[in-house]
Image (tube, one colour):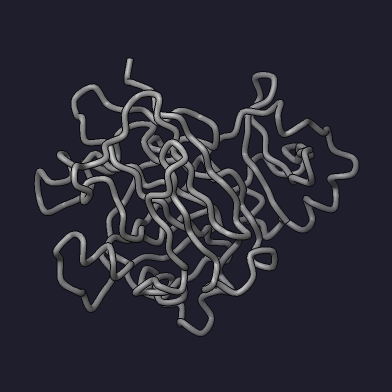
Amino acid sequence: MKFASFQHAGRDGWGLVQGGMVADLSGVFPDLKAAIAADGLAFAASKAAHAPEYAVSAISFAPVIENPGKIICIGLNYADHIQETGRSDSEFPVIFTRFANSQSGHLQPLICPKNSTEFDYEGELALVIGTPGHHISRENALAHVAGYSCYNDGSIRDFQRHTHQFVPGKNFPGTGGFGPYLVTPDEVGPLGKQRLVTRVNGMVVQNAALELMVFNVSRLISYCSSFTRLEAGDVIVTGTPGGVGARRNPPLWLKAGDVVEVEIDNVGLLRNEVVAEA
């Protein structure tokens, strides 16, 4: 199943996407996070035949989870990205966080800030926690996943480099694309061979298989749950492969008018245009 969060006719909604239509299920649960927390995705989907229905082309996409309690981001999780940054391997995942208001939905603008010219892309796989848990084992970790989505962990590199902490460069408003859909694990299939491809203005800038992650999804969930209780609707953004703009010669910085796409097999295609901050 595929689900989306959206606005339509001035109202917030969420629903089941089938073909070119979306069934509005906000009358069953108020939002997608609430449906996940109630373990109610299948129940809500069973009501789709009697729900208001809109063309996907008529909705405005919101971030898949608009109100996550936590957005946990993983840095340096592909060997080629570690190499291009000149950093050494780590025994444990590199962790930082994003705020909810740093996110934009599919087809919504990414905002290039006025106080930096170093806006970079990072195509990534995101997962959304379904079943809460603390001290989750690697063996049971995938049972805690509600679904997957595409993510562009947009980074303001000069602010990221201000200190050893990444957080300032990762939280400018409207710099992180998230969407278009939450795709349930049965549709995505076993993770590994799916390719993650990032394009800027149609040019492929990142291309890697998910199996090349240093810390796979099971290890990430287990590790993150060792220091915090993961709750329904929490988001883990699993890291980017090599090819980021900052490490190109010359650097490839995003600017107003650029179009960034993040595509992952069986998960979807996230598309955002960059606009200048007003």
